[in-house]
Length: 192
Image 1: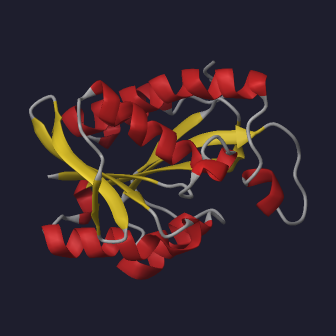
Image 2: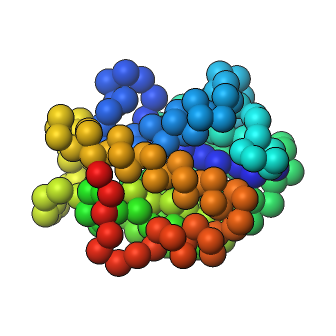
Image 3: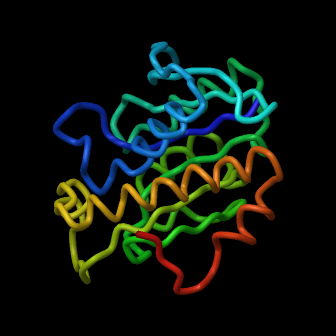
């Protein structure tokens, strides 16, 4: 089974904030593949189903971003999922709004949700799909920026980006990270 984790913060207050791109992607994937993400387990809401012929679990931690790792670790341990079958979808303030990047391992890049997952798993050896959220140069504490809602024009763009995030996830599930990276890791390409 593949475990696809979307990072975000629970609650209506955070729904369309920059930090919730991972949740928006999971909601879109769930809708496209008729997977009900309602079961409460592991400090998350989750649903199981298939993308193509591959069994998947979609998971959204409800522990807030900085503690996401516990839910991911609990799910991996309980379900017996290998790290090669884990994909984490998150925002990235270091990428321009509309950009998408996939990596098979690496640092957290300052993303506190990824920091939490890497610490809990004791490894950075899992795939991550990042969606750019940067529209301005942000210096100092970025908390207010990532927790701010998208502007109307930006929200339209992020909805288009979500279409490509869903496609990248399908490519990863069906063909592996190299296939998804070949299509989406194109320098200076943006969507929306």
